[in-house]
Length: 237
Image (cartoon, rainbow, N blue to C red; front, top):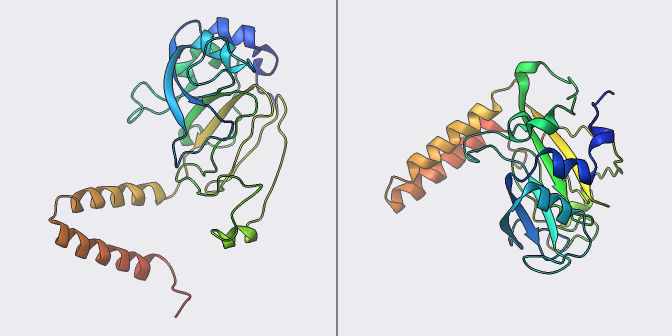
Protein backbone atom coordinates (compact mmCIF):
# COMPACT_ATOMS: atom_id res chain seq x y z
CA UNK A 1 0.00 0.00 0.00
CA UNK A 2 1.09 3.58 -0.53
CA UNK A 3 2.59 5.02 2.68
CA UNK A 4 4.15 8.18 1.30
CA UNK A 5 7.78 9.25 0.99
CA UNK A 6 8.61 8.33 4.60
CA UNK A 7 9.79 4.88 3.51
CA UNK A 8 12.68 6.42 1.59
CA UNK A 9 13.24 9.84 3.18
CA UNK A 10 13.39 8.97 6.86
CA UNK A 11 17.12 8.54 7.30
CA UNK A 12 19.00 9.63 10.43
CA UNK A 13 20.26 12.77 8.67
CA UNK A 14 16.84 13.72 7.32
CA UNK A 15 15.02 13.12 10.60
CA UNK A 16 17.48 15.14 12.67
CA UNK A 17 17.33 18.08 10.24
CA UNK A 18 13.60 18.03 9.49
CA UNK A 19 12.30 18.80 12.97
CA UNK A 20 15.36 20.61 14.28
CA UNK A 21 16.10 21.14 17.96
CA UNK A 22 12.62 21.05 19.50
CA UNK A 23 12.82 19.32 22.87
CA UNK A 24 11.37 15.83 23.33
CA UNK A 25 10.87 13.71 26.44
CA UNK A 26 12.41 10.26 26.08
CA UNK A 27 12.93 7.00 27.97
CA UNK A 28 16.56 6.13 28.73
CA UNK A 29 17.50 2.62 29.88
CA UNK A 30 20.86 1.14 30.85
CA UNK A 31 19.69 -2.30 29.66
CA UNK A 32 18.02 -3.35 26.39
CA UNK A 33 14.90 -4.89 27.98
CA UNK A 34 12.68 -2.12 29.30
CA UNK A 35 10.49 -3.06 32.27
CA UNK A 36 7.43 -0.90 32.90
CA UNK A 37 6.70 -2.68 36.21
CA UNK A 38 10.05 -2.02 37.92
CA UNK A 39 10.56 1.20 35.94
CA UNK A 40 14.15 0.34 35.00
CA UNK A 41 14.43 3.51 32.94
CA UNK A 42 14.50 7.25 33.50
CA UNK A 43 12.85 10.12 31.67
CA UNK A 44 15.12 12.71 30.16
CA UNK A 45 14.75 15.62 27.74
CA UNK A 46 16.88 16.22 24.66
CA UNK A 47 16.70 18.34 21.50
CA UNK A 48 15.12 16.15 18.83
CA UNK A 49 18.11 16.28 16.48
CA UNK A 50 20.50 15.30 19.29
CA UNK A 51 18.19 12.50 20.38
CA UNK A 52 17.93 11.01 16.87
CA UNK A 53 21.69 10.86 16.47
CA UNK A 54 22.17 9.33 19.91
CA UNK A 55 19.47 6.72 19.27
CA UNK A 56 21.29 5.72 16.08
CA UNK A 57 24.60 5.23 17.93
CA UNK A 58 25.83 2.01 19.51
CA UNK A 59 28.24 3.72 21.93
CA UNK A 60 27.79 7.26 23.21
CA UNK A 61 30.38 9.89 24.01
CA UNK A 62 27.68 11.80 25.88
CA UNK A 63 25.17 9.87 27.95
CA UNK A 64 22.94 9.88 31.06
CA UNK A 65 23.44 6.39 32.51
CA UNK A 66 26.05 4.47 30.50
CA UNK A 67 27.86 4.64 27.17
CA UNK A 68 25.67 1.86 25.71
CA UNK A 69 22.33 3.10 27.07
CA UNK A 70 19.18 2.68 24.99
CA UNK A 71 16.72 5.38 23.95
CA UNK A 72 13.00 5.30 23.24
CA UNK A 73 10.67 8.06 22.10
CA UNK A 74 6.90 7.72 22.20
CA UNK A 75 5.29 10.97 21.13
CA UNK A 76 2.54 12.43 23.30
CA UNK A 77 0.23 15.41 23.09
CA UNK A 78 1.20 18.84 24.46
CA UNK A 79 -0.67 17.95 27.64
CA UNK A 80 0.06 14.24 28.03
CA UNK A 81 -2.99 13.72 30.26
CA UNK A 82 -5.52 15.45 28.02
CA UNK A 83 -4.18 15.68 24.46
CA UNK A 84 -3.80 12.70 22.15
CA UNK A 85 -0.63 12.02 20.19
CA UNK A 86 -0.97 13.27 16.62
CA UNK A 87 2.05 13.37 14.32
CA UNK A 88 0.41 16.22 12.40
CA UNK A 89 0.63 18.39 15.54
CA UNK A 90 3.82 17.17 17.22
CA UNK A 91 5.90 16.59 14.06
CA UNK A 92 4.16 18.46 11.21
CA UNK A 93 7.10 18.35 8.79
CA UNK A 94 7.44 14.57 9.11
CA UNK A 95 3.65 14.19 8.90
CA UNK A 96 3.78 15.53 5.34
CA UNK A 97 5.87 12.47 4.39
CA UNK A 98 3.22 10.00 5.59
CA UNK A 99 0.08 8.67 3.95
CA UNK A 100 -1.96 6.88 6.61
CA UNK A 101 -3.88 3.84 5.28
CA UNK A 102 -7.65 4.31 5.42
CA UNK A 103 -8.68 1.15 7.23
CA UNK A 104 -11.67 2.81 8.88
CA UNK A 105 -13.87 5.88 8.52
CA UNK A 106 -12.09 9.18 9.18
CA UNK A 107 -14.24 9.93 12.24
CA UNK A 108 -12.92 6.74 13.86
CA UNK A 109 -9.34 8.05 13.85
CA UNK A 110 -8.03 8.33 17.40
CA UNK A 111 -4.28 8.99 17.41
CA UNK A 112 -1.00 8.64 15.53
CA UNK A 113 2.00 7.89 17.74
CA UNK A 114 5.48 8.57 16.37
CA UNK A 115 8.17 6.26 17.80
CA UNK A 116 11.94 5.96 17.60
CA UNK A 117 13.99 3.17 19.24
CA UNK A 118 17.65 2.35 19.66
CA UNK A 119 18.94 -0.89 18.14
CA UNK A 120 18.35 -3.84 20.46
CA UNK A 121 15.66 -2.14 22.57
CA UNK A 122 12.81 -4.39 23.74
CA UNK A 123 9.55 -2.85 24.90
CA UNK A 124 7.45 -4.32 27.68
CA UNK A 125 4.63 -6.69 26.76
CA UNK A 126 1.33 -4.78 26.61
CA UNK A 127 -1.92 -4.30 24.75
CA UNK A 128 -3.45 -1.09 23.41
CA UNK A 129 -5.12 0.73 25.01
CA UNK A 130 -5.05 -0.99 28.37
CA UNK A 131 -2.56 -2.79 30.53
CA UNK A 132 0.95 -4.19 30.79
CA UNK A 133 1.82 -7.86 31.21
CA UNK A 134 4.07 -9.14 33.99
CA UNK A 135 5.58 -11.59 31.47
CA UNK A 136 8.51 -9.45 30.41
CA UNK A 137 10.59 -12.02 28.54
CA UNK A 138 8.21 -13.81 26.18
CA UNK A 139 11.04 -16.08 24.99
CA UNK A 140 11.88 -17.30 28.50
CA UNK A 141 8.75 -16.93 30.63
CA UNK A 142 8.53 -18.07 34.25
CA UNK A 143 6.01 -20.88 33.74
CA UNK A 144 5.90 -21.69 37.45
CA UNK A 145 4.67 -18.20 38.17
CA UNK A 146 2.60 -17.86 34.96
CA UNK A 147 1.55 -21.43 34.00
CA UNK A 148 -1.25 -20.29 31.65
CA UNK A 149 1.27 -18.54 29.40
CA UNK A 150 2.03 -21.90 27.81
CA UNK A 151 -1.50 -21.83 26.32
CA UNK A 152 -0.97 -18.49 24.60
CA UNK A 153 -0.96 -18.65 20.80
CA UNK A 154 2.05 -16.83 19.46
CA UNK A 155 2.51 -15.04 16.16
CA UNK A 156 5.95 -13.77 15.21
CA UNK A 157 6.96 -11.54 12.33
CA UNK A 158 9.86 -9.39 11.18
CA UNK A 159 9.05 -5.91 9.91
CA UNK A 160 11.24 -4.19 7.36
CA UNK A 161 11.12 -0.62 6.09
CA UNK A 162 7.68 0.10 4.60
CA UNK A 163 5.95 -2.90 6.17
CA UNK A 164 2.58 -2.50 7.90
CA UNK A 165 1.38 -4.67 10.78
CA UNK A 166 -2.27 -4.61 11.88
CA UNK A 167 -2.71 -5.61 15.54
CA UNK A 168 -6.29 -6.30 16.67
CA UNK A 169 -7.49 -4.55 19.80
CA UNK A 170 -6.63 -6.24 23.13
CA UNK A 171 -3.89 -8.44 21.61
CA UNK A 172 -0.76 -8.46 23.78
CA UNK A 173 2.39 -7.71 21.83
CA UNK A 174 6.11 -7.32 22.46
CA UNK A 175 8.53 -5.47 20.19
CA UNK A 176 12.29 -5.74 19.69
CA UNK A 177 14.07 -3.22 17.48
CA UNK A 178 16.69 -5.25 15.62
CA UNK A 179 18.27 -1.97 14.51
CA UNK A 180 17.62 1.76 14.83
CA UNK A 181 13.89 1.90 14.27
CA UNK A 182 11.33 4.52 13.31
CA UNK A 183 7.63 3.74 13.31
CA UNK A 184 4.20 5.33 13.30
CA UNK A 185 1.42 3.63 15.23
CA UNK A 186 -2.11 4.61 14.26
CA UNK A 187 -5.08 3.91 16.52
CA UNK A 188 -8.74 3.90 15.59
CA UNK A 189 -11.76 4.10 17.88
CA UNK A 190 -14.10 1.15 18.25
CA UNK A 191 -17.76 1.92 17.50
CA UNK A 192 -18.76 0.27 20.79
CA UNK A 193 -19.77 1.26 24.32
CA UNK A 194 -16.59 -0.23 25.81
CA UNK A 195 -14.72 3.05 26.23
CA UNK A 196 -17.77 4.71 27.79
CA UNK A 197 -18.10 1.83 30.27
CA UNK A 198 -14.46 2.23 31.33
CA UNK A 199 -14.92 5.98 31.78
CA UNK A 200 -18.01 5.42 33.94
CA UNK A 201 -16.13 2.86 36.04
CA UNK A 202 -13.22 5.26 36.52
CA UNK A 203 -15.63 7.95 37.73
CA UNK A 204 -17.27 5.45 40.11
CA UNK A 205 -13.90 4.45 41.56
CA UNK A 206 -12.96 8.08 42.01
CA UNK A 207 -16.22 8.65 43.89
CA UNK A 208 -15.46 5.68 46.17
CA UNK A 209 -12.25 7.42 47.23
CA UNK A 210 -14.39 10.06 48.96
CA UNK A 211 -15.82 7.48 51.39
CA UNK A 212 -14.31 6.40 54.71
CA UNK A 213 -12.15 3.28 54.37
CA UNK A 214 -14.67 0.76 55.77
CA UNK A 215 -17.45 2.06 53.48
CA UNK A 216 -15.12 2.19 50.50
CA UNK A 217 -14.16 -1.45 51.03
CA UNK A 218 -17.78 -2.57 51.43
CA UNK A 219 -19.11 -0.81 48.31
CA UNK A 220 -16.07 -1.77 46.23
CA UNK A 221 -16.81 -5.42 46.95
CA UNK A 222 -20.45 -4.89 46.00
CA UNK A 223 -19.36 -3.34 42.70
CA UNK A 224 -17.16 -6.34 41.93
CA UNK A 225 -20.04 -8.74 42.64
CA UNK A 226 -22.40 -6.73 40.44
CA UNK A 227 -19.92 -6.82 37.57
CA UNK A 228 -19.50 -10.59 37.99
CA UNK A 229 -23.27 -11.10 37.99
CA UNK A 230 -24.15 -8.79 35.10
CA UNK A 231 -21.18 -8.56 32.77
CA UNK A 232 -20.13 -12.15 32.11
CA UNK A 233 -21.17 -15.77 32.60
CA UNK A 234 -19.88 -17.59 35.64
CA UNK A 235 -18.58 -20.86 34.18
CA UNK A 236 -17.49 -22.22 37.53
CA UNK A 237 -20.95 -22.91 38.96
